Image (cartoon, rainbow, N blue to C red; front, side):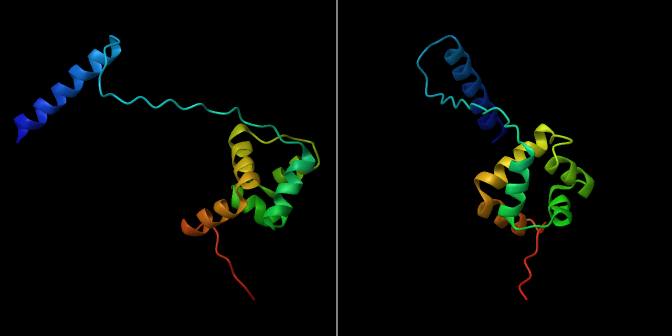
Length: 113
């Protein structure tokens, strides 16, 4: 069994070498393009928070930041980091999917009452 796995590994390495040399192989190459992180203005951040339906304290807790930070973003005093901007972008573009994800990973519990 060990020899079979070793042989398969060596065959894969040989195929990779052939691919690098430009020879036709069965190697599949997937290329990803990362879209630049957007920047958000104060009005955008408030709009996203309201779209999600959370108060500043709950929104800050969801993002793992302080309420003071959310307030400073919404007042235009400070700007979100690239990591926070990517989360804001996700909440803006795919609100329902993100909220469902947060529920699935037990970050967010919906209470109706």
